[in-house]
Image (spheres, helix red, strand yellow):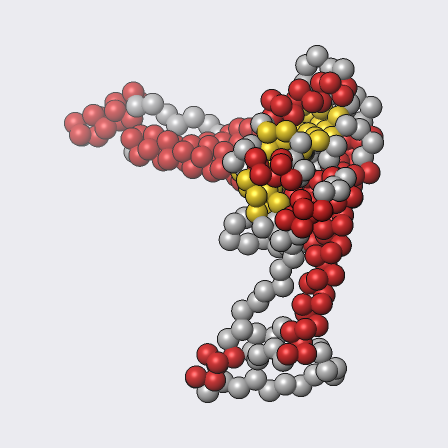
Length: 320
């Protein structure tokens, strides 16, 4: 009897569990939290996508031009860069363009697309070559009204390559044969599974020579080159230091961004350069918003939900 009385008194004085499921309230709190996260993200997206302010468009070309994603990361997209150049050309607040280049070149077609877009832009444009602006990247630079490079920048390389790996002998070593089935005599020129014939090598060299001539003539036209000796040296397709490139007429001034800004100020009568950059993303995309915030919202919900469950379980354990 005494034990029953003690137990009854303990039950009377012990805290009673609150009415209502804690999971229900945790779900409500988590839902509200997710709502505000989405709302805050929407505001950030709209603000960041607002029309940018500035008077000089900053256009960067970094890495290989064109091509596909590789070990060195995403290449410079001609579509994105051409779009940026055209957008800057239509922006009435933008008085000029500064193209910052750090690229070894890339696809001839992609390089030409960017070069033509820059050449057709009606506003003053200056190219700044950083560590390297060679081959297709220099082709783009040549379309600017003014080219600035460091004395130790690598530039030039006005040439074309069509090299490839050929490992037919390696296959033969391991008993692997190449069975040639083609619908045309020259259909598989450049196949790595067999050697080039003399005729095929002559065909490829002829095409490379045509591309080289086209590339060289375009640079000559863009840079207004007339010195035969300089043109002959440039035609060797070698890479030049910035100081050598200036002597050949490939570069107008040695320096960097500061010198490029000085030229732009002279051309536009600006007293201060304020850069504007353009983003490809639209003003608002619900899909983009959901994709960018799903992980964050999920993480926030999980932390709130499970930590609440653990606290509720611990509290219930203490009461029982």
